[in-house]
Structures are given as structure tokens and as C-alpha cells.
Image 1: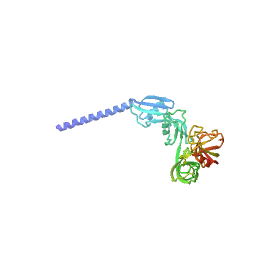
Image 2 (image 1 turned 90 degrees about the vertical axis):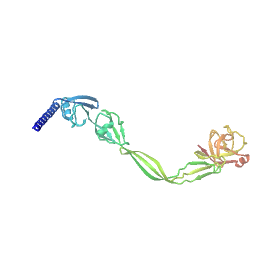
Image 3 (image 1 turned 180 degrees about the horizontal axis):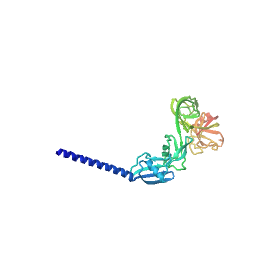
Image 4 (image 1 turned 90 degrees about the horizontal axis):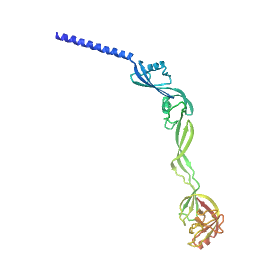
Length: 333
């Protein structure tokens, strides 16, 4: 008998609980339909931003948009972007952003291409419109530039192509070397030889057109040997590469005035100095005289005019043996 009473008591409690739950459900439905939900809407256009607080009973953001349209506050087009999506269920306190789209165009790879222009940066607009680019491409203006009605966007597609080519390399001429292993005054021509090398060509294409090409040595297969003019300097010891600025046939006379003689330029005369016409060959000019060798102009003389060069010797006997000669003179840079 006691168990039966307990059963009836529990049953009454369950019925009461069901009634409470049903009442709560009815209350929630009632609250949902009768009490409006608060939604914050940010409406952005190319000319500015407008914030709105919407009290709505709409179930989705699409319903919120319809309500705003009905109230004359906002009209969405198929160009506009809504975030989150219009199908999103409305929740109290949720935030929604609407970007107003405007038909426009950009210059893409040199061609006028239609896009939809939105408030935001150039980078965001390219992404919205599915325009892709890589690190070599050039976007103008900068990606972080804010888009306006007047912003002219240009995307130049840049392609870098590299190609290795094996080429024969001809020997160069004009290499002049002073060498003390060769007798002073001796001029020797050494023929060069062609080589073979691999060059890397880098070509730059902008919007399909080649705008630049560079060539860089990658490696030698066989190094070239340049033609060389060797000028002997065994008596004076100069070495290294020099440039020949000009040549002429000089009227060259030898002279000697002792070991303590000083030239007109103020420096001591010795083997390897010479007298010149300073109006034609300035003091300090480096010369190479065939049959004599290297000499620096540091002196002058009454009879030294024009292409006359007097060469200082080591003794009177050496000067007499040289006498006067017409030989080729190299002016060194």
C-alpha cells in the first residue's frame, strides 16, 4: 500500500515538471516573437561609414536587410558584401558589416578589366575580385592604399625567365702589361686564344613583352686568353697592366749629365727619366720608348720641341751608343 502511494506521488511530480518545461518553452517562443533582437550593422561605402542599431524579430540577416530596406535605411544589391553571410541566424548583440560595391575597372596585365570596387585597401579589393598576383608582379598603388572612387589600380604581370647558354668567347685586344722579366725597350706581342663559357641570360617580361635582358658569366669551360702587348722593364722594374692613350714616332736623343743632375720639374734625372716639350707632353707623363724602356717626363731642353724625347742614360758612353733614333713611343695612362 505504501509503495502504491509513492508511485502516485512520483507520477504527479513528473507531470508537474513537464508542465513547467512546457511553460518555459512557450515563454521562450513568446519572448522570441514578441521581444526584438538587437543587431549592430556597420554600413561601409567608398565615401564613408555609417553605424546602425537594429531592433528586429527577423530570424536571419537576410530578414534584417529586408527590414532595413523597408525602413528606407539600406538597400542591398547583388554587388554588396555582407559579413557574416545573409543566411546567418540572428543572435542578440551580433555585429554585421555591409560593404557597398561599385562597378569599376582596373588595368590587369595591360588590359582594362571590370571589377567591383569596395571600401577597404587595394589588397582587399584584389582578393574580393579574385585577382591573383605573385611576388614579381607590380601592383600600383601600394597594396595598403585605401580605395576611393578615383583610385586607379594597375597590376602589371612580371615574368622572369632565366636561360643558360654556352658561348665561344673571343680574346680581347688592348691588354698592355709592364713586365720586368723582359729586357727594357723590348716590345713583345702575345696572341691570345678563344675560350668557352656558360652565361646565364635573365629576361624580364612585363605583361608579355620583354623589357630587359641581362647576361652574367656563370662558369668557364675553358678560359680565354687575351691578346697581350708586353713591355719590358728589366732596367727600371715597373710591373702591372697599363693603358696606352696614344702612340707616336719620337725623335729620341740620348743625354747624360751625371748622377746628381736635376730636371726642370725638380726631380733627379736618372735612367728612366726623359726630357720633353711640356706643351706637348706634360711633366709626370709616363712613356714607354721602344729600345729604351719606361721613362717619366721630368726635364726639358731648348731643342726639345714637339714629338722630341731626350732619354737620360747611365753614362756618357751609353748616351753615345744610343745617339739619335726615330722610334715608337707609347704614352701610358
